[in-house]
Amino acid sequence: MKALEKEKREAKKSGTTTKRCNVEYVEWSGTRRHHKKTYHFLEDVDVDFLPDSDFVVIHAPDGLMRKNKSGNWIVITPVEQWSGHHQF
Image (cartoon, helix red, strand yellow):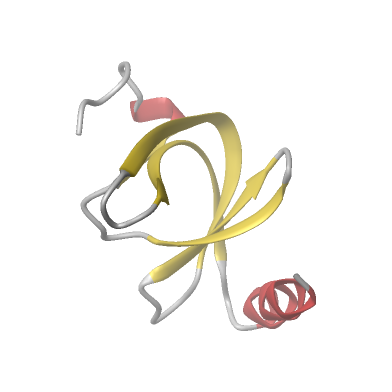
């Protein structure tokens, strides 16, 4: 967790863009044989878009999360463009 905080501070210095967004993502759990997909939706949270990086830092109520912004299992929508839930 400390490494993520340090990365966030360094990113702020290097020109990070922060936007208010809605985020939908999938978290996988279980075993390889009995896997489970859990859908998560975060509404109206701050998202830091790191320059020259494929990752974003999401300010969730539980703490900071680092996610790949271009994966198949995540949808990041700025609040002003949001029009409802997406289906994966």
